[in-house]
Image 1 (tube, rainbow, N blue to C red):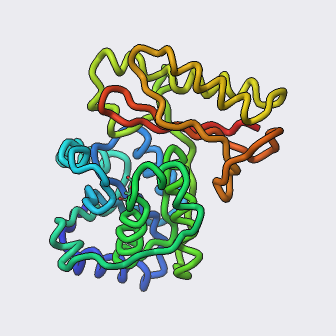
Image 2: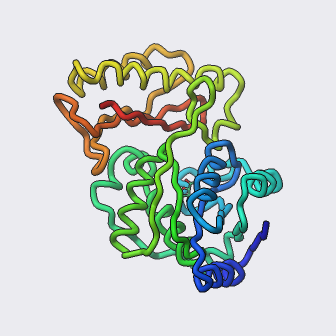
Length: 279
Ligand code: PAF
């Protein structure tokens, strides 16, 4: 497996892949890899001639400096995992390589970026869009793979590809879960044993919400989920929103097909997100 730290090397590799008519599946990551990332790499392996990945903890998408400082960094282990999963090349740029100058670019995603994560993490999606756009320009992938745990991010990236007319196919990948239901996330590594034991409660509540969806209104289900967290001794609900799968705008009244429940919860100082299709 090749490992490139410079834009020039990565772009040259990607350019020759294109010239030789080979398709490339690209998996952008911030490292601290887990089985969820590897499932993306395996799917990319199945669907493309070549597989590339990036490991870059993108400072401009963190609205909380402490979260950035504490974000797990496990480069050697990540490279071993990518190599065993069949990745051909990994791009591991420094912050200076990616951002030699102050980033001024501001994308406009309208209502898609102002709800849920956008409301609680100001600037987050602009930072994601800036880095993903740059990574696409550098790695020139045929297809790019994103997990549905970050469902809103996935919708933002689809909007970015559309508005910037980028020639890459976005492949959504199902949420990867631990045996107890907790959605896999790099942040799970930072949970204390006590919080780790409590965290599967999030998916349990989401499944209960789903079981109520056909016979209850959105407001009733939001109430139900809010109550389930009110008395919880460890987990603090930040939001639970019932929203349309495409435009992510909140749904009221009867729940129609293509509606999801989206949740953000604090387990101590670790923020976890998850979602479920309700109908
Ligand atoms: O989902 C992530 O890991 C990041 O937001 C991404 C897409 C790699 C951009 O930094």
